[in-house]
Image (cartoon, rainbow, N blue to C red; front, top):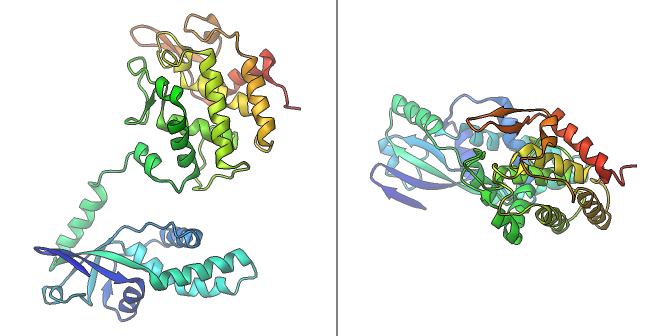
Length: 347
């Protein structure tokens, strides 16, 4: 199966074919890092059962006398050596895992074995590149390629549970839409931007609800206790309680609302969810309402002198007060919130 234009085309190889070509020394690859190889193999093992695996096309060149073939049998890999070598090393590890006493590992091994037998991968093939041309293309691909924006990764990578919940909350909460979610930029520049949260900030708040931590784990999978639908309902409940206290059309306006300071929103998220990670859904609903209700008389406006008792500094021409973003400041605010009567259920 090919798609051809001038001196390059797309050729589809099965994984089995490529591994046989490597064994026959018909494939030349770049030097690889064993650490990177282990990460790729772990990714393949962890996602074999769900079949949620994405592998971009390999990029390769071949001699002109090979290019006329429907499937050239000699390749010089320009980009994708780690992916291809990881495949070539899998057989031994699959066999070892098949004999594991751990049933989950054994199942992964069999799932991966059968998946590889049926898997094909695209190779973007160029004709007759010299080694210098191949090296230059490799450099260009790995230095000039545009990184996918975080907002697009959140929007389109539905394998990540945080992304799933973030997107569902945005879709389901019309008041949040009115408050504004910044989807084009990773951060919000105040006071110019009056949207309540950026997409990445909303995802961090959702992570607080699930994990009771402020910094996202580097691990792909987030440990959950409740069902996805239950987390969505809890987050929407929290947002609606918040918007009952502060006008959603003004909450992101730095001239009026202190909640335009993201550290204050993070503190509010931590305060509401502290000690709740392992509680059941109905108990958590009650806690959210009671804790938020304890703050119903707080003056959230910029003019409240209380805010400047927390760590922060005056910045800019208009000397707006910005709260520090460090965990110490956030925890300082959480303690104050709990002192307002919102520390119930923590015993």
